[in-house]
Length: 612
Image (cartoon, rainbow, N blue to C red; front, side):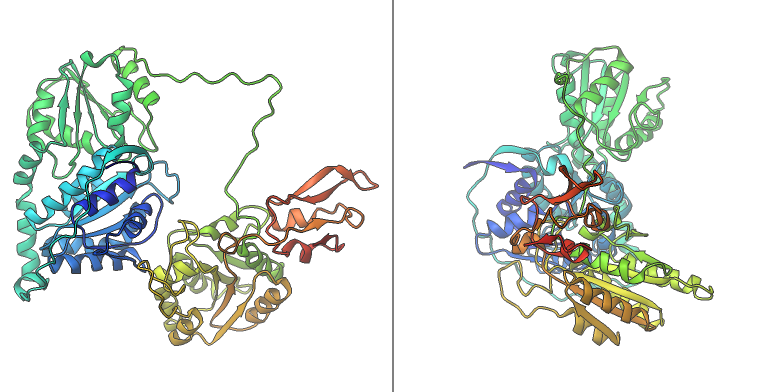
C-alpha cells in the first residue's frame, strides 16, 4: 500500500519489512520518530524500548543480534558518542542476526550542541556505513543494511541527516509479516568474549576485509554514476537531492556520482568516475569525506591536473552547516560558468510591513523550570554562585532575564563539571556555591554516575533535579521515572529521591517549583549545608497536564513596575501600551491564549495586581 511517510517513518517501515525483532534507542532530534513509529505500527512480534541512554540501547541491540534476531538501535549524532564504547567493540566481535545502528546527523546544527559526521565515525570504527539521500532511498537502504549485516556478520551504520529525516514521500509499503524466530544464543567463548588475542585477530579481519567490501559496494545499486558530461559532481546524502535540483535542465553538462555507502568507499566506482571527468566538484554536508576519498584515489591514479577536485578543502564549498539547492547552483556557476536554473525570488514585502520580531527559544509559559530557576536566583541573591546547566528544555534557563546557565557541555556534564569547579576553587576565600541543574530524563540517562562520583570524592555542590515527569524537549518520551514502558507496560517508577539516598546523598528536599516561597526556603536551607545535597523541583510539564485557568492583571492595582515581566520572562506577560499609569508607564497585561495559570507571576507582583 502506498503511504505518505516522513523519512524516519520510512526507516521504521523498512525495518519492519526487513523483519526487525528488537528495537532500542534513546530520543534525540532528529532521530526520535523511528522508534516511535515502530512502537505505533508494531505488528505484535517486535520488542521496543526507550533505553536509559544510547550505550544501553546499543548493548541491548547487540545482545539480540548475538541470539540471531534482527535488531535496530536509534540515536542522534551526539548519542553516538555515548554509545561509542559498545559500538567500537561490537564490530570486532561481530553479530549473528542483522544489527543496524541508525544515526541521524544534524547539520547546522539545528537542535544539537555541535555538528558531527557519522561517516567519519564509521571509518574510525571500521563499521560499514550506508547513507540516506531521500525517504524513498532510506526505506530501501535499511533493508539492504540488514541483509548486508547478516551476510558479513557485522553491525552496519545507517546514517541520515535532518532534512531526510523530516522530509516526506510516497512509498509502497509491503504487508508486514512475522519473521522466523531467532535461533537463540549459542555459547562460544572463542567468538563472543573479547579477550585481547581475539581483539587482535578481529582487527586484522575487519581491516583486511575493506578492499573486498569496497569492491562489493562499487557494484551496489544505491551507488550510481549518472550522465556523461565533462564536469563531475560527487555527492551523497541530501546533497544529492540538492545537486539534482540545481542542474535540472543542464544535465548534459555533468556526470553525477552518488555515494550511498561511504565506508568502505566504493573505490572502483570512484576511479571510473574520476577518469571520465575534466573537473570534479564535491558537495556534501559536514566533513569533506567523499572529497578526501577522491583526493586519495587521485594520488593512486597519479593524475596531474591542476584544480581537479573542488570542494571544502579548496574553500569552494562551506565547511559547516547545511547546503541548499540554491547554494549548490551558485557554486556550480562560479566554478564552471554554467548558469543553473535554480533560484527563489523573494516575495515583495508590503511597504508598511513591520519588521518581524526576534523569536529566540524560550521556556513555555507555565513551565515549572522557570519557577525553579527563579527560586534559586532569588535565594542566592548576591552571594557568589556558579550554575552548571545541561541538555534539555532547562538549557533555555540561560536566556534573560533568568540568566541561570553558566555552563552547558553535554548530557550529565553539569553535575561533574560542578565538581571540577568546586575542587579548583575550594581554597578561595569567597568560594562560590556550585549548583548543577539536571532534568529527570537526563538524571537517568547520564546523571547518576556523576552523582556517585560527587559523593565518593566528597564534593561540595547542590544538585537541582528539575523533575517534570517526561522527556520534554524531544517529544515526551517515557523514562524510568514515569512508570510506563514503550511497550505500554505499567511498571514501578524509579524514585529519584530513593536513588539519591542509595547513592549516599544525605540532604534531599522535594518541593513544588510553582510555590515560590517554599522553593526559596529549600534553597536557602540547602545553601547552609555542606557536601553533596539535592533539591528535587517536582512539577509536571505544562504540555502534559494542559493549561489551567489563565490569570489577569487588575489594571486598578497595577503600578507599571514591570517586575512580572522583567523578573521571570514569561511569554504570556507583555506591556499594555493602551493602559498607562499616572506617570505614563504602560501597565502589564496577560495574553490569555498563552497563560497556563501557574501563578508564578502573581507571587512575584509586589502590588498583588495579578489575580484569577
